[in-house]
Amino acid sequence: MAASALIDTGAILAILDSRDPWHNLCKAVFRQLRMPLLTSEAVLNELFHFTNANRGAMEAAWKFVRSGAMVVGPIPDAELAQISLSSSVVLAVTFRCGTGRAHYAGALF
Picture (cartoon, rainbow, N blue to C red):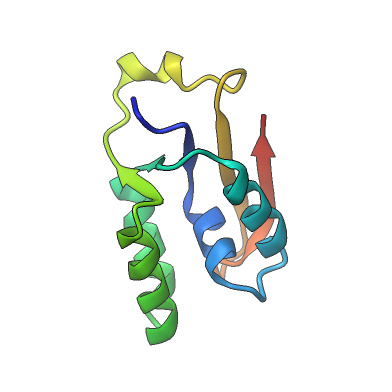
């Protein structure tokens, strides 16, 4: 697997939105990671669901997706062992409120 870490929807939203309370943390961690990051089709689906109501946010999301900062790929069971928290970084937002805004962002090393 070429990706060095996983990225989840909440972290992407926080990186893209300077008003997000986790923006600075997620952006700082993002800058330290080796690109590309791995994500899934489910993350893209959620990303565009949350940005759908705002044209600027949707355009920023598309720009991020096309930037090469992440790759979309399956995460088969056979590869789960390679994505261990001891050897990879997981940049993710684990809790969300009803609006899709981040409640908690974590970078696990």
